Length: 113
Image (cartoon, rainbow, N blue to C red):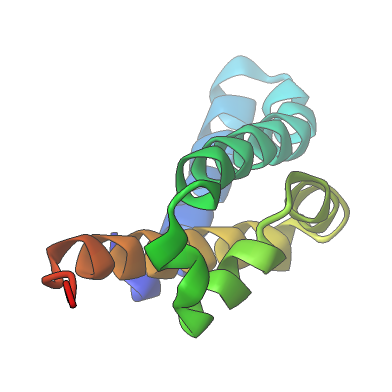
């Protein structure tokens, strides 16, 4: 996913919730989107940290290590739950950057010496 797609995805989620609310006549979608997406983001961050945390080349890369530190599941959940309109796009952006960095590190030839 490209970094710039985080905001359109968030706007799309809001539009889908609005459409569901109008069609169903029930605002339940709006009340569920924040906790459900915050839980998903925290679980996703946990899985990414488990995969990346054991890889020494990722931990030695300053950019990837810094992003990995900011994706602690508790931080991600709090940001997405308390400040969803800003926290959810933020998580999608840093997730994209971390996964891109991990992919680049895996493609780089390892210096054997």
